[in-house]
Image 1: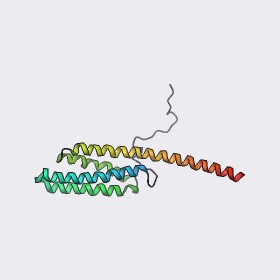
Image 2: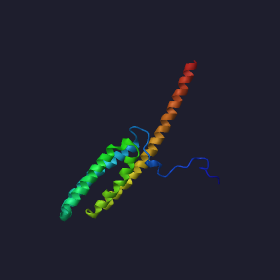
Image 3: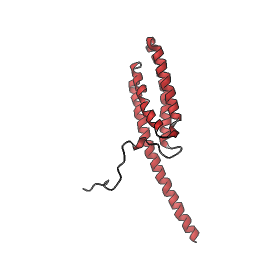
Length: 151
């Protein structure tokens, strides 16, 4: 059986982390939405931790508010290139580690991390498919326009 990918260029498994070229693409929308909702959830988790761990309130609020602000800022910086997407991946760590104070955040933080990474890869794929469809439609319009000009 012949290898179907013998002539195809190899794609890096991290190619989905590269930002798509679309200005308002699915990748950026998924990432920004996930980071924003995650910031709200982290804020409420900090409120819960405030009551659950009263002797560590200063740490809870410092860690929590810095994480919330970083998540919101990262969501706003996604149009600046690849580094905010990677920062978003790194920011999943303190969200998951909030489970040290609020046990359910181990599950919720892991869910958001998986959702964020899935959104990056799926959004990149959706944007690439949309670019291919746009290119095909423009090529068809160009071919139709050339035929109309010949008449």
